[in-house]
Amino acid sequence: MKFNNAIALLILAAVFCSMPALAVDKYVGGSPEITAYIAGVNEFSPGQDATITVILQNSGTNTAKFTNQGTLADDDLATTAKLVTAGLSSGTAPVVIKTDPQSLGDIRSPGKTTATFTAKITSDATLGEYTLPLLVQYKYLSNNLADQETSDTIQYHYTPVSQTIPLTIKIKPEVKIDVLNATTSNLVVGTEGYVNLTIKNIGYEDGKQATVKLLRSGTSAVIPTDNNVYIGAFPRNGVVTCLYKVAISADAQAQTYPIDVAVTYTNAEGDTVTSTTDTIGVPVGAKLGFTITSSPAVVTQGETSVVGVEYQNLGSITAHDAQARLSTVDPLSSTDSTAYLGDIPPGGKATAQYAITAASGAAPTTYALDTEVRYRDALDNSQISDTFKAPVVVKQPSSKGLQQYPAALTLIVLMLIGTGYYVLVMRKKR
Image (cartoon, rainbow, N blue to C red; front, side):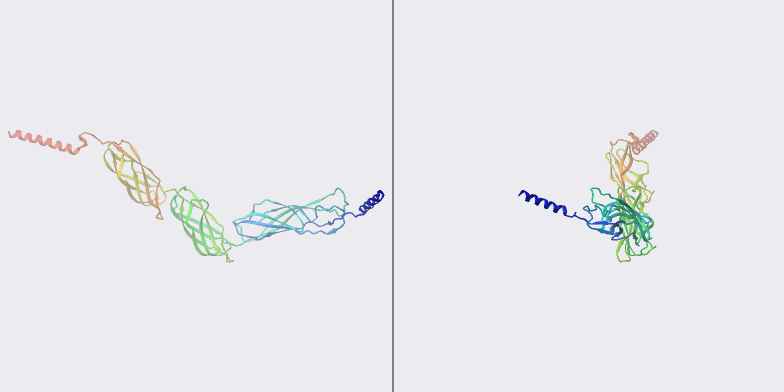
């Protein structure tokens, strides 16, 4: 029994020893073949924010295939592009590339991968085709293992590759606007006025059914209230004039604020598109203000006096139908605290009459009374100025004796003279 078992084990061992080594296929020669193209639209407009999607494709092929070559397979193929990076640059094209070179990993053959780049087409880009250089860098296995015996150590040799692939983009025709002139009328803080624009089409497209739009630029203090002007045909090199009504924020300052202009039109393909916006500056004047230019009004203790207060327009626009109001405080009072001033041009003056009563116990001093002017702007909107001060002086009566009553004093003197004359006449008669 033991002898039979030993024979069986020897036979089994012989079988295993006589089995051939497991073989693998190996490839010889070849290298990666990288090509690239822009996926989707490659046509852009001046001033456009663009996303350029690039497809990188590896079409490398092996030159030969060996079978039953050892027991170890190649870790890499000669046609595999390893550690691929791709960087897009603008070259001489009117494009700003905002994305840095990208690492794309390995691209086997056949195989492809995608790289996406963010770009900005410059606003002055002209019609035509442009080339963007795509720099692709990688390495590949330049030796092969077909002729290496199976061993514990395998030697690899990689060759670096750097190649530039040209990619073509197109700048398409479009309406492009240039604001030749911008004039304003009655634009001051807190009011409404007009902006008049002269606009030229400097693009390569003849716009049809065009509308020129005036748009608020971010949080600008200039707010269009009438922002669309239909102009119809807007051919290349055409010039149009458009008038817009705008409002100025009440919390604005006297400075220049931005405002955007764009044109919506129908292009040659029948699509409705909007041009790139053109931003211009609009000057805004200070809020209309007034000051008192007359001497302080004077009232007497215990009396009612009609005083004149002169107002001057310090602004840059006319205050139409202006009315002044004076607010009295104790010990002063008034039953007639509003006065009509009429139209006051910039720098102009107008006088208001107020009846002011000073209490008999009013302290003889200067009182600063609040006053304001309500008016209408050029577009007939009601406006009101900031509150400012009007000085009013309270004085004491000039005397407390008979001089306070001059008529009575004259009568007494006449009576005394008459009495003396009567006495004198009567004495002569006696």
